[in-house]
Length: 236
Length: 265
Image (cartoon, rainbow over all chains, first blue to last red; front, side):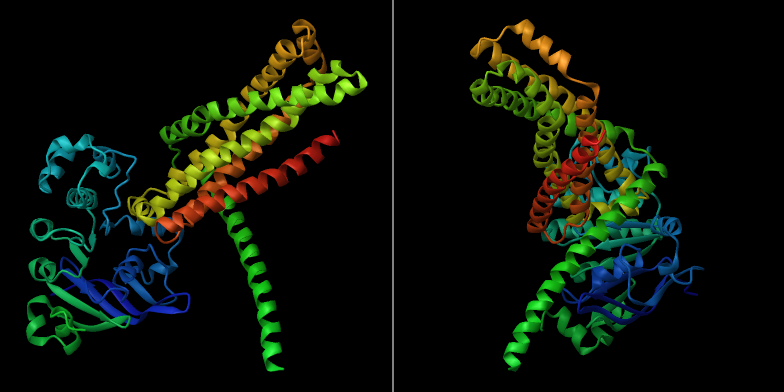
């Protein structure tokens, strides 16, 4: 029996005159991995930022377990709500004035070596500054930071963007291993269909600010609508 | 006719939008200030960040402020001599130097120098953190960005500027002393005695109060424009420029207001 973790109803979000999300409806289920795909600028990252409370929205509701609408939360309760998320940002967003160790210590003071092992990184990296690391390694550290505080929901914003195919494959397998091991509800925004097939149970396709297709990731090719098939085949 | 009407309306719309932007910015800055005051008393205090900022804003600005002060004191002594020698009032030069330096020049020039140096650095650092989602990351790591970034910087600004200005006062007076004794052949003991006898507590105190206010303005503006940086490198560059320009204008404005207040004391 699937249990709804987050329910999004009629969500709309504008930036000035531009409407990015338009009456979007989506349910995110507990312990499942959902991939959100779509063309650039269709509002995928904005949607995740609305979900984790980093962006406000004009209309609609986002309910989380027994919270009716996260928009109505007080500042302190919103902070608690945001603490439930572990986020891997598009460019890792590591604090560049701090070492890897200090970045990780933001979440937890101990077990850092174990978490580095989990993301296949050597202990020697702890004293390095993020600017000295490749983007692939930065993303692994970002992933370690995201999972270190044992989040209820893991959000991965384009985890493989900007990486070469080999590193992308490594990151995808790493995420698959972590998602399967920890059974965390995961939302992944991606353009990389490999990420979708490798570790996402379900896929939502965003078009014109709303979900135009939702279904099992392994049924995309069989049941996907025309726009989705065109998208994965690179036809616009 | 319609064309003229459109032009006329366009003109007033433009003026209206400029006024709207100015007043909405003022409102946002006031709200930012209110948030600063609120988080000053609630939430975690990051002592390590505070001491780091004391070093960055205060200690690291010392060479720039010192150089500005010494040259200002030297120039002031030379220019005063040019004027005062015309009516044989050379003995008043130590008084003019110490009054100008402590009341006016050291706080204003130190403020402007620190605005260009540290204010710009604060706006650039926080702006980069904003556009690279580091501030969003802080929020999701249950760390309040105001407590972590703004409070330590503004407090460090308020504390370090008066210290810088006090040191600047001493160096500026020393600059005047060097010129008067080495170039203009003043008696060193008489110069120092004149300086010491003439300067009052209020002269130094008013300069230090100004410095506190300027330190607050510089760091608050740096943090505000950094937090509101948009886009990429260009957005960060713009936030840095706005931070320095607005800090400099506010410093000059507040300098007049504070001088008027102290003038009546």
